[in-house]
Amino acid sequence: LSAGLHAGLTACENDEDYFAIGLAVGETISVEALFTDAEGDLDLELMDIGGTVLDTSYTFTDNESVGPYVAATAGTYLIHVSLWQDAGSTPGNSYSLDIDILPAPCVDDSYEDNDTLSTASLITAGSYNGLAACENDDDYYAIDLLPGDEITVDVLFSDAEGDIDLQLVDSSGTVVLSSGTSTDDESVGPYVVPAEETYTVVVWLWGDAGSVPGNSYDLDVDLVATCLEDSYEDNDSFA
Image (cartoon, rainbow, N blue to C red):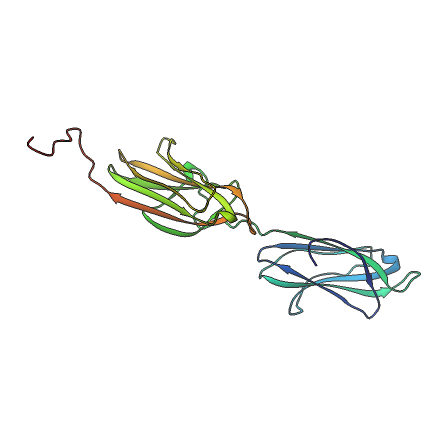
């Protein structure tokens, strides 16, 4: 089965109903069996593929429900419906299954909570892998730079899973460089720093896409120390 309402089902005595449904890690499932108890009492279980019962609903009233249950592992899960006791004017009982599946949430990386200039995570030159860009959750990374430092920043990601944009901001909050394409990866620089100050790399999810909430990315910060010329240049010869 898939998420949604599945009507016109029938529970008969000594005839268990099992329905398979696939879940990804972190997805949340809720299931409701809709029926009239006066026509026969139904019970409902949620199980893993090995038959381990994860949640149950055994009442003596109309309808049963299990969940919300968060899938700890990806794979096939089972919805089990059984007629516990028949009643009413006709053998068995009719029912509907209403299945709701919520996507896995976007999982923050270890540099959170770095959502503003004032809470930026301090980094140095290097590569930072397995970062997460989530909707409405910008990432700020602060880096201390010296006069003459030449900085280049690359954000590596698959645009099909969500479009990410990139900025380099100085200590006053002014955007020095930006990159906002609609393709894989973004890059700013090389940029030569005129004075000693803390700059901030800002990464954000411009538009989500793909099969999972948010998008993962790698951050590469390349720094080359250069000699910054003084105001008497160009005075490199006798001429």
